[in-house]
Image (tube, rainbow, N blue to C red; front, top):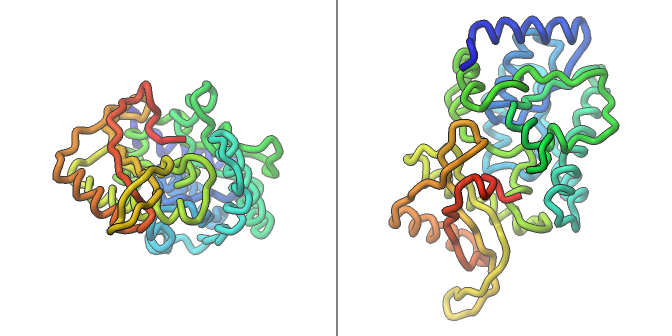
Length: 305
C-alpha cells in the first residue's frame, strides 16, 4: 500500500516542476481517478490549471449537474457541451476497439481546443496502473492510454497516479479531503456508456443505458459493489401489454474486486433482481428483457466492450 502523505508531497512537487510556470488542462470526468489527479494538480499549480469536463452525451444520469456542484470551488472549471460531436464521430461504428479510439481522439481534440484558449502546454490525466496494463497488453485500449491518437498538440502529458491501483487512489482522495461521493464512487469507464452498448451507439440505446444504469446503481447500493452496471447487449422478442415487441435486452452486472484486474460476480437476491427488471422494463417501452451476468473476470472483462 502506498504511503499516502509521502505520495502527495512527491506528486505535488513533480507536477510543479514539470509544468513550471506554464499552464495545464485536466480532463475531469467526475470519477475518483480524474478528480484525485485534479486535486493534486490544483494543489501543485493552482490557477495555472484549467479543469475541463466534457459532456460527451455518454455520461450517467445527472452527471453534468453533479460535476458543476462538486467542483465549483475551481474558478477555472470549463464544462464543454460536445454531445453532438461525439455522437457524430461514433456514427455507424460497431467495433469495440475503434469506438474506444474514436472517443480517445475526440477527447484530445476537445482538450486541445480549450488549451489553445487558455494557452496551456500540458495535459494532466487520471491514468492509473490497470489502465496501462490492459492497454499495453491485448485486453482493450483505454481511451486515455491506448486509445490516444498519434498526434497530440501538447508539450507533455502528466499522469501523477499512473502507478496506483484503484484502492490506493481512494486512499489519496480521502487524504485530500475529496467528498465521499467522489472518493467512494464506483468506477465509471472513461468512454462512458459507449462501452455499455454493444454495436453502434445511438440516442435510443443511450437513453435505455442511462436509465438502466441509474436503476442498477440505486438498487445495488446496499450491496456495496466494486462496480455495478447495465449494458444494452442486443434485441429479443418480448410482450408489452397485448403486443409483441422486438425490444432491447439489458444485461445487469455487479462485481466485487480489489483493483479491477480480477473480479467476482456478486450474488444478488431474487427480490432485488426482480425489482430491477421491473423498473428497467417499465422505464422504456422498447426494453423486452433483463438478464443478470454471473461471469467472473476472467474469463469476462467487467465492462462489455
